[in-house]
Picture (cartoon, rainbow, N blue to C red):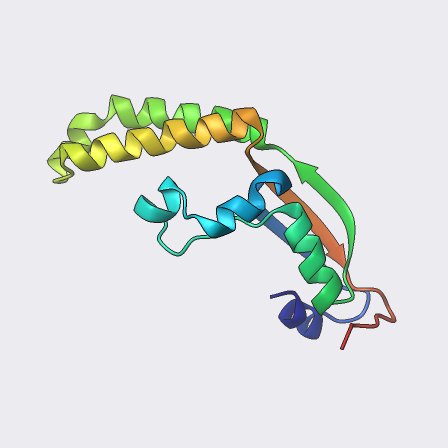
Length: 139
């Protein structure tokens, strides 16, 4: 990913990335065992850690991080809002043909993510990367 971005962004250019991340301390275990969300909600999905992303940037690009903002606690509040709206419209969801298993799974997903953001196990970050005017990319 970072090699492709590096190839496509002109020297001095910037890339802005928003991504849900997993704590560096949990990343190795996360790689070994898919979690509930990977199994039921986003098969094949993957949350990088900040450390994994910076390592990949170092190995495959000349990018430098010029700004990083984390706002997972704010995103936890967003999930509360989504869950409240979901609960208020359950009859509409059922009318669409969504069964009770789906509704329970979706409710669990919203709670699961809210807890992850509140505890810092997962986060949402925005990163601004800059490609230096004269970047040297590792071979």
